[in-house]
Image (tube, rainbow over all chains, first blue to last red; front, top):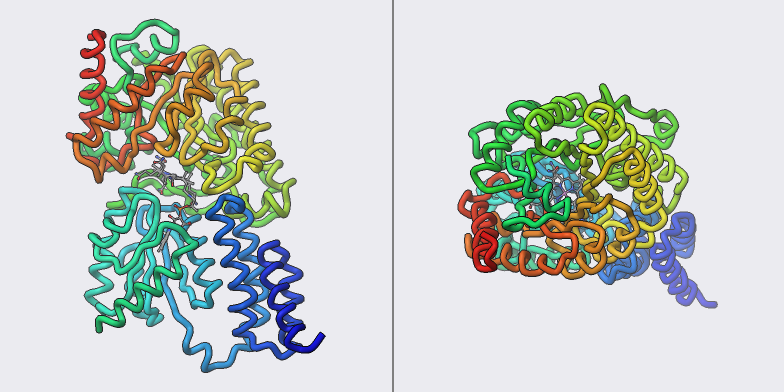
Length: 221
Length: 349
Ligand code: B12
């Protein structure tokens, strides 16, 4: 087996181990990839993230459920811990970043956490504020971290009412921040009416939708 | 207080479809009080619910409880809803954070733990006013999630199933303890415990996981409770549980039981699988109360009543989960209006 073949094998192995939520295997293969001289960025993107993408699809088709998804994410994160210190500094500077949380008054956070996992899988830097996040905290955290995206989750029609206010505060500070929203009571129309830049129905499409919204916001300025 | 809902339970004829209350925070707002008073002030809560029910035509009677039940009782902390956007109590610290904490868990004293003294005070008012003695003290899997957080519970299902079984067994025993305590106080035949089970939604766990980790415990708890002499139990099957419904149908809930559904479930499907032994309750989308129009709510109710006609043990209209506290009053009123119109058209009233 030549080295590129071995490399392809490792990347495929990483993806498969993520899908099989085999944490030991992802860590072992991550170490092997470093030894083989595979660029850690490539190992993340073509191995781990590729696997996580499959996982997202399995969740959408109801073959995987939250328990499986969480363990897949754990397997991915364990390997990320091995790979991250080896990512070149310039490459790190290019990473997208997002502040995420569930809005005030709402403790539903399973969906938010799945979306967070998908951002992580796509190589984003995620600042997670948890659940029941006060309006001001979103914009404060955004200012503190300089994140380009703020993503909010809400599962209740009561807490949903907090969203327009948060968006107003974020945009007043910097209109170029991209705001994503999601959760059961929302739909695309409502999201737009609230002043959000993007919406995703499920974690599987969250990253793609965010990138589209990001490009739109950036393109407009 | 009318006994329309109770007559339906007894299989007697009723003049119109009963309207089953899943309306808590709204009652506080309706009376000009903060939502917290529904949960931390039994007397006021009872009063606020009674008057709102009377005003909007709800049957049954006031109830006490919330979905985050279990956290406080097993030694964690909850916060009462005080903020502008808050709808119900929520957990701020779970009793189990580490695996070792599971070993240390003990059964709460139903006389003293968490919200139970408040719930008991509330039930004394139910007794006094002659309404069903009905409080929320479950469901089992949801209590388990409220003990250790849903996510830990999910991870442990695959990695440490024994821990999950241990927590589930404790949650089941606790529910039985609570119902026994209530039965001693009021007589088992008067107690109608409510179990809300949002955490078993198929957007969270699979039906296979439900079968292994949930079903045996629900069956056992139900059997023990019914053996005490309790006649009816209510299960609120929240969220999308279409894949679990055939399994739910194996759980005894009384003669008849009461089964309420989220808007995600098709009522025909619910009636088909659970209607022969249980009164079916449901399932107007809570979102419609806020985002819809009076017509939207009205039509959803008529549709539900229409579907409910085929329920062998009867049907009650309710919302798929709690009616949003901020719902416009006109929208809430549509439930009663639709029920009365349907009854008039079919000669009931
Ligand atoms: C599990 C659950 C709970 C659990 C939450 C546990 C936890 N720590 O998260 C518990 C038991 C605590 C709970 C409590 C309550 N609940 Co609840 N709960 C649910 C249930 C059944 C499932 C939610 C869930 O986790 N789904 C699984 C996840 C994976 O899906 P998801 O959240 O939709 O997320 C996906 C997408 O929406 C999207 N997404 C989500 N967020 C974001 C964010 C962004 C940026 C993007 C792009 C995408 C995105 O991606 C996710 C993955 O694909 C729903 C039913 C429903 N239809 O949603 C009710 C539901 C949300 N609950 C409801 C209610 C009423 C309550 C209570 C008020 C009940 C009460 N009176 O006590 C309390 C409120 C507590 C509080 N203060 O917040 C109602 C809300 C109705 C309303 N007013 O709108 C619902 C809708 C039930 C119903 N049938 O109507 N609940």
